Length: 263
Ligand SMILES: Nc1ncnc2c1ncn2[C@@H]1O[C@H](COP(=O)(O)OP(=O)(O)OP(=O)(O)O)[C@@H](O)[C@H]1O
Image (cartoon, rainbow, N blue to C red; front, side, top):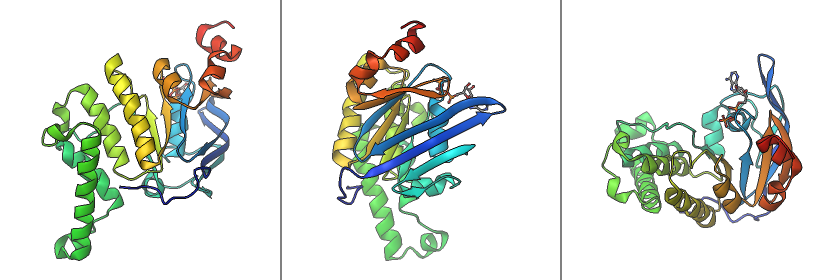
């Protein structure tokens, strides 16, 4: 399964400029800007309430910016519905689980795969060759992703019955099933132990290498962020205070100040 079409790795995937969002006077994100290229793994960190989830919500159309621009593959996606943004190639996971607990593990992935292999009401009655092809493609994606995420043995269990760590990996499988070029992971290591977090880091690298997907990780787990990300953007009270390599960020006085209260 290849998600990308062999364009240059230097391709700018996502570009935000002047991105600002306020909630009744409280500025959650102010003048944020980032440029993300294909296959990059970038971290977004910051103390609680610094605007990280707001950033993801704006990119995915869950909320609209007060001002600023968001371009994905060169076109503005501001004002687009989330479903359209997913169809263009952006997928995300959430801090809390959004799995369908009463569906099986496999059905959870299939339902996401069908967002990219739509089976309309007429096609599902007629069940012609296109329907058969789309069903087969969704089944193949689900099989591959469940294998990648180590969930094949759990395929027929209800999602709600999975151990927590498996649920987190299932959420990523669901996001990948929509064949994104950009994957946004909101605190993927929350609640995982250190072994599970190491496995997760390996999986995120594999996802990037195998599918050519760019990944943005919002995370409080500094070991994961520092070990995984090539670039990190640091937010504090809605403002970008620093962008750099893990080493640059670790030693930046404003970052130390934001996290430790002194520089
Ligand atoms: N829908 C909303 N209505 C009102 N205020 C909001 C809303 N969403 C976010 N905020 C506020 O905006 C600020 C940024 O919130 P956001 O959730 O983006 O932070 P965060 O960095 O993701 O925090 P955390 O690490 O705790 O998840 C916070 O002060 C938050 O209370």
